[in-house]
Every structure is written in C-alpha cells, then in structure tokens.
Image 1 (cartoon, one colour):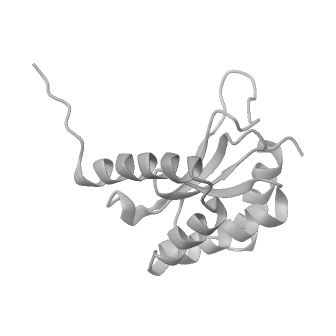
Image 2 (image 1 turned 90 degrees about the vertical axis):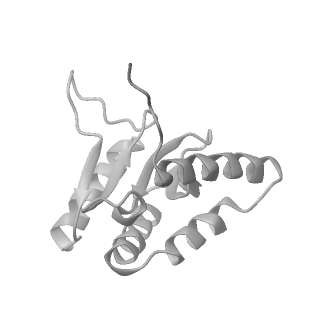
Length: 138
C-alpha cells in the first residue's frame, strides 16, 4: 500500500491557492499579489521572474495574478494561461515557465507546455515572446 504525502513546499502551495481564492472573492488586487510574489524572490529566480513578467506585459493582454503562490497570467475569463515557477519554491535546480490548459498551443498530437529556464538572453526572450503570443492567439 502506498501513501501519498505532500511535501512542505506542496502544502504551502495548496495553502496559497486557498488564500488566493479567498482574496479574489474579497476583491483583492491580483496584479499587486503577483508583484509581491516576484519581489519576495531572490537571486536568479527573481531576475528571471522580472524578465518574464515584462515579456508577458509587452506581448500579451494577460492579467497578472498569483497561482499557487507563483506569478501567473490569466485570460479575460480569469483562466491561468501561464505561470512562472521559481526553482527555489520546490527546491529544484531550475525555474520553469508552464503553460496551462487555457494556452492556445495545441499543435497536432504533441506540443510543449513547459520550459526549464536557467537564464533568458535576447534570443531566449524572443522565443518566449513568440510562444506567449501564440498562447493567447496573437
């Protein structure tokens, strides 16, 4: 018999999701929560999150929010399209950019929905901007 237990980091993410839902019901500023999540990061995670945040703002009309405590960006219906997961959040070796079900990236029977990120040079930023525009149908 196997028992599924959540790590401390996973439990914190679940608590963050519950708090986000409550805050949304109370009319909290979702964009400010996203800014605060990025501001709380350190090192390369913060640098990557700030760059990604800028790319989302420059290339899409997605609204900033948090999703399980991570910076995320939603469509007009409030559905999360993409999120930035800092490596430090789950003690993994790299950050990830993760596209969700609302992203319009379907391409046949196989397409990427996540990218491991260790840095974002100009070429990387151009590629991510293209994927962001595709994800929102632009």
